[in-house]
Image 1: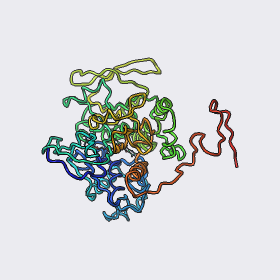
Image 2: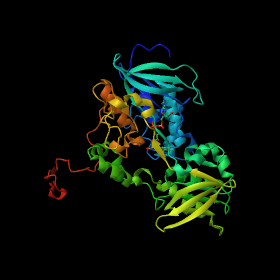
Image 3: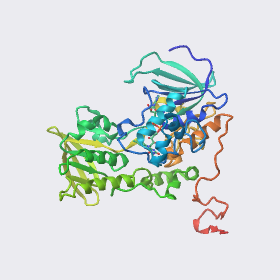
Image 4: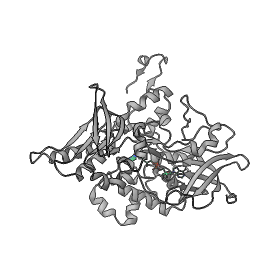
Length: 463
Ligand SMILES: Cc1cc2nc3c(=O)[nH]c(=O)nc-3n(C[C@H](O)[C@H](O)[C@H](O)COP(=O)(O)OP(=O)(O)OC[C@H]3O[C@@H](n4cnc5c(N)ncnc54)[C@H](O)[C@@H]3O)c2cc1C
């Protein structure tokens, strides 16, 4: 360990994904606010395994790091385009949904310009140091492979923001295959790294009906010869369903909805989230259209593509069979089962929030937990800690259970960061009172409160 740094920072960010980068950008220039943001990777790279050519953001470019709160910020996407001399081409392109590679390049540009961002630094532990009245944060410099390249040292900070992102979710029965580099089974997050290998396999199976599964399936389809596609796409959902993209439907990604969700009882939240799967687990209508177009083109000369697109299927056991993978499938609606032999599998089953425990383990005795043992998080995105801890630990993208479906959405990044900056500094980003036309719940003054026993006792005064 090197000797402790004497002056605590005001804010230390753990992880530099888009969410903490948004916080770094909005904190930049706040008078007297001393910040540092650390990431274990060598440089910013946004989900590199899925930067498939032509794939776009699911949200408009206004959902950049800052614009939804401060469009005048120098860290806006438009200012990035200006700095790169690309404003005119962008203007004529008339793109609202920008390329994912563009968003990646934009964020990297911000990290390279912002002095508070430092890469190659892994945060190992955050604990409260009562003597210093600050968090003691243990940091290890690491190289490209994640191997320590120097001794650990300690930094102190009055507040900490955890933006550690997600980790690939792999069904238990496929885990040992994904973990074994000799097996032709990969999580979609590693797709591009292995694409050359995958496209050359005789038969490939994609598992999962989210956006990643659809994009991987489309990409494979485009790389396979007509009539000899040799592709299967199986998913548990009853249909390859489109993502909710109606204007009023999208109001569930507003701060108004987050506020409403936070007021619901825990069991209601837990029931509601899976019911909202079409808001975050489905496929964009555009990608579904592109898949159909590509398949349709392949029928024009009278042929039929060699593909199986089968929803409603659960993938059970998997085993290796003479250099092939054998997947046991069952169909819930039909009550049938079958076996699929394939030469490669892409597991596109999404992501889980990265567990916070390894980093903030020493704080666990100070944390309030909900009935399911998850951290309680307040309206300012702070872990609820007991009075023995004097500083705040903010979380970004680890609060879906308490703040709802908007948690991983880039459209709320700037808002959440502004709430955090407002709660620790003298700078106040002004945030509008209302963000949705929908009135969520019956708390609005237009509704006369009832007895609380039945929703039917409520009257609506229309004007
Ligand atoms: C392929 C893909 C596309 C997506 N597209 C969209 C979209 O179009 N629109 C949308 O709204 N959402 C989208 N999302 C969802 C979401 O916005 C992204 O997952 C986003 O990257 C989340 O940002 P983050 O900052 O939470 O985490 P991440 O981007 O995962 O970054 C977390 C960072 O923390 C670092 N880290 C972790 N632990 C430590 C540690 N102990 N020490 C130091 N560093 C650490 C990691 O190295 C990583 O760099 C997409 C997700 C995926 C997977």
